[in-house]
Length: 78
Image (cartoon, rainbow, N blue to C red; front, side, top):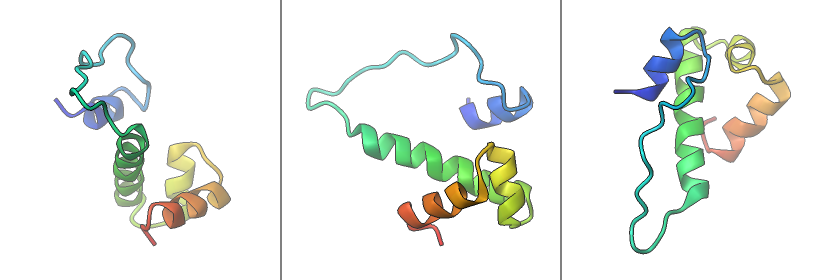
């Protein structure tokens, strides 16, 4: 199941205890890339939900517009 869709259905509430078990590959993981990937997905979905209105997308994500612009630049999503 897509966790983002589950979160959307739950009204952006993070469900407790519903994370898949973590299995580490032998060489470990790149946590920064994992987090960036999740952040990109939420930002893309917020932009879709807001009709591309960045201020509204920031509001949906619970962050300031300034923070939203920073994250867009950091993730090369401008």
